[in-house]
Image (cartoon, rainbow, N blue to C red; front, side, top):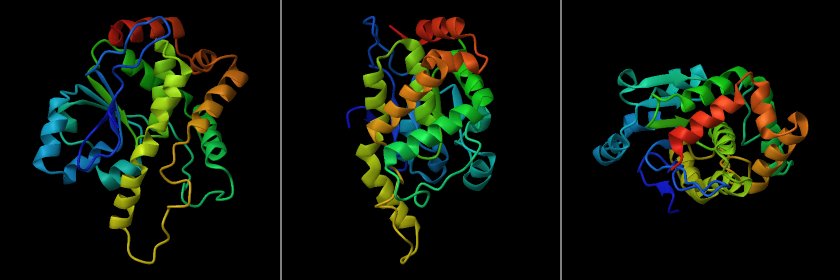
Length: 247
């Protein structure tokens, strides 16, 4: 749990700082955060708001659907931030109901592949925003901070040269906070509503990210090959990300 930043309302915030690259460099702390829905801070207490303010964010990339934002709101102070809505996922799916007999690793790997295929325009825009010299400190988030957020994290960390094992480990950290997500879900739903305890909901099995990256490399020659297929200038992105975020 050391890398997860503790909030009362937010359950899955972490600084990507501290991850090591294959050539021995380190992602700088305090510049790049991944998170669950920052809109939950609109119902947060003073301590959470103070913790959030200390992140001193300049940019927020909201990966949710526009209808999610309309329903749940934006990050507090969005008008004072460089706030961008880039909905990389084009086909919603219900993690508590879809294909309940399918193993979670296969289920999520297939959903991530679909998102990567459908969301190339938005994914490219997100990567370019993160690499922009004026963006950091920056946070990117979706609803629970594991699926859409996990895809973007995996791609930028790959470009920075972080080994796949660390990328997978970072993704799987959500499993540690799954009990809190489940408790939060139970608190918000009426008695008699089916619990997601035995479903895919809030799962982040390491093998899901392994399969996603393996199959992305199979289909595009490499993960960088996929990023090139979005239309992004991979050498320029790589240089910018490494210059901005690595010690």
